[in-house]
Image 1 (cartoon, each protein chain N blue to C red):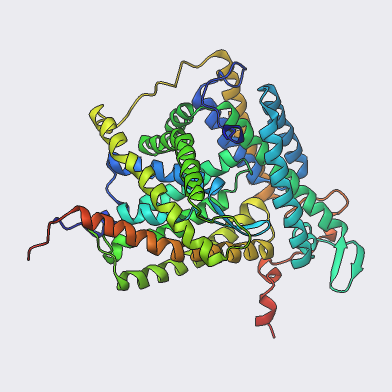
Image 2: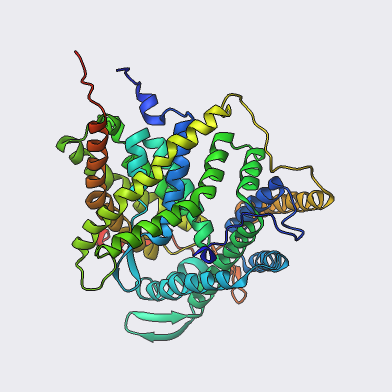
Amino acid sequence: MEQKSFGEKLLGVWNTRTIVTVAIGAALFGVLMNYGSIPIFTNTSLTTAMIVPVVVGAMFGPVPAAVAAGVGNTIADLIGGWGMYPAWSVANAVASLFIGALPLYGAYITEGKFDVKHMIIYVVCVIIGNAIAFGVVAQVLTVVLEGGDMNVSLLQGVYASVGNILVECVIGIPVIKLLANRYASRTNLTEEN
Amino acid sequence: MNNRFVINYTPGPTFLHKLTGFTKVALFLVMTAAIISTFDIRILIPLLLINVAEVISMKPNYKPIIIMFLITFVTVTLIGNVMLFVVSPAAGLNNVGAEHILWQSGRFYLSKEFLWYIFVVFIKRTASFASVMAFALATTPSEFASGLNKCGFPYKVCTIVSLAYRTIPDIANDFINIRNSMMMRGLELTGKKVSLWKKLKNTVILLVPMIFTAFGKVGNIANAMDLRGYGKNKKRTWYAEHEASKGDRIVRILTLVLLLLTIYYVVMYRFINPWPAKFWCPWLQPEEIQHINIFDTLFFMKWFKK
């Protein structure tokens, strides 16, 4: 098995396959933003779109995940037509950098590697990523670009990140596990030392 | 289902539709920059009118646009402003710089400046909404990609954008089919009596086939692109980009003028000679305005100051 350098793990390898995956991820992000929300009460719902950077990150690394989430959110804004919120697109991309960092700590989904140690690191990454993205990045950009009020946007940020953390952990972990099992069952090769 | 989307996949007949991708993307980027750069209603209203005129000139199907506008209005403007009123009634003071109180009850109060702040933010959001609509209605995915590439983005990013755009209807169809068939087999996803935990678990069951279906296409598309030599050269040309017409030149010049005006405005009125508060307000003189540090307005800061 060839060993990848840190930079390659971070950036991903930008061949045609990566590009198509990121594009389809972005499209899926847009579709899930529009259709795939889980209603909790009237008027509030969880979006399942943040599962996309988890999957793309698991396969190709954090930067492809961030591009998929950023482009996906922009496209979702364009088709959903609720206006452009560049602050939230950037925040989602920043959060995805952390969420999609699975290969950096050795969770190679395509080789079927995802165990309890990776799960714990994953949850920590998810929480840190959401805190930075929706606690800092989104707030600064909202105030600078849109002139929104920081208190309201902070409350929305807390709400969004709690929802995201819930989706990324409760839905994300089983999905990654299933993906890993599926990839593992496809190959009968074992690593030789 | 497709009525919900405003994306345009076929080139239309009107003047704006016929422009090249580069012109449309450049106009959209400059327009967005102009709307973001200012909080001054004297500039926002003309920008809003230009964008509304653009939308009207394309003779679109108004129904989805109006529905979207109403949804945005209810969720962002109505609910957002009620929240704003409850959480920080001082938003007027913080952003406009003064307070003339109209009504007060306990810690809640309504000031003239608060209403002005809401109004300006609403105009700004609507202008941004109109510019997004104008762009989404005028541009096909291929034009979007070719325009972005001509604006200097690497072509691989542009391919991502156009490919994502292009696959959205397919993926939306797949999603709806999978969801309907899952619901037919008795998977509860939206019912009111189902607990949140159950809904989340059921969503996993829904999303796994969705992810496999969507990413299962990757191999085919990537192989087809590789076979046609995608990514071999450093540059590529675009089928959708045609020669600039007379209309293109006019719009490009107008875009350039708008860009220069925006830069002039930002340099002149945001840095060299700024209005003392963030928002311009017709009934306030510059001397009346108080300076508020934005970090002092955060509700949790007072816990640290004891």
